[in-house]
Length: 258
Image (cartoon, rainbow, N blue to C red; front, side):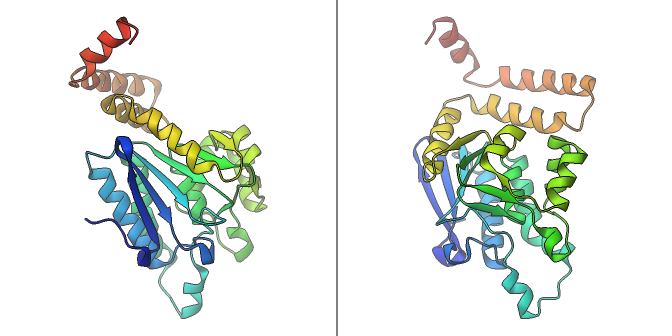
């Protein structure tokens, strides 16, 4: 599948070491996701997940925001599709692809990530935020609830009381708070989000792709497994890692301090 055109609301750049930058390109509406862009994003994430030459994906937004959520303008055009149907077709496949792909996804967040945009941040493996960036789950303000897996991510990471407060009160979560809560990995000066994400991606791309994929898989599964089940999975994945072509070379390099 060919890279998207700007008419899809996406831009894509492939840089060194198999790193792909995927940008939401609707800055005039703060990168709100309409159906065209949501479907294009889904298709690209699924394609990149299957591309063996891709080592890391960076997701970001052009302009002053990461993503303002779903484009509410589509609700004004008489769209009567069930919310569950829209989620299942437009957003959930993309979010599942981010979680399941065997390569890391980094979210570079500038400005606001709101609504379903927060779900793309939470589904990422690493998050870089500008100092002025923030997450906002304002669903309650229009009589809805967080979706796209946001409830699961927040409850697992923060516990019920904190997650309920942030969602029921629609409290913006600024970058510093995201860092302290474990929702972000780095906070940088505004405008430096993508550069920091590239540096992280380059570091990840230098690692064993087999071990990196296994690490992501083990950690994603661990939240749903018992300790004993996790240890069994770790053993299975360790066997898989040791069978990788570059394992012996990396062991030798480690011993020789290369």
